[in-house]
Image (cartoon, rainbow, N blue to C red; front, top):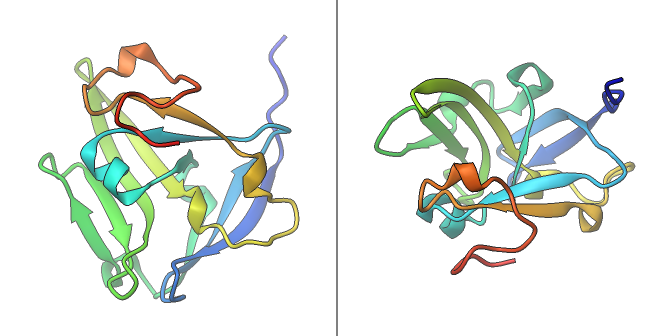
Length: 151
């Protein structure tokens, strides 16, 4: 029998200066988990992701993503949206190819969820680490950082 799907809770989030504001419906368990990748962009941004669906994300301000700065890496398949004023990376979306198959990606930088906020305590979030720098996705997540990655 499959485990029940955790209920989603809607939280507010923003960049540091407040130009980007959003809501995100997140399924939190008793021990929520977020991910860190050690590829150079995620590592240097300090991006700590929690995967959600695009339908669970609502941009409140500005009016559209076209008004937000968008960094794309070489492949141009993943958009990393950030504030042009304070520089905080808020969310990523797009798709990636792994072993010849395309996968959708939508994630929010969990560190941009507003604190304090009822029902959300970031100190309870467990971090799992991925070795994206070496394209070592088959290793899966682990509970400790990869060499050169911070906690």
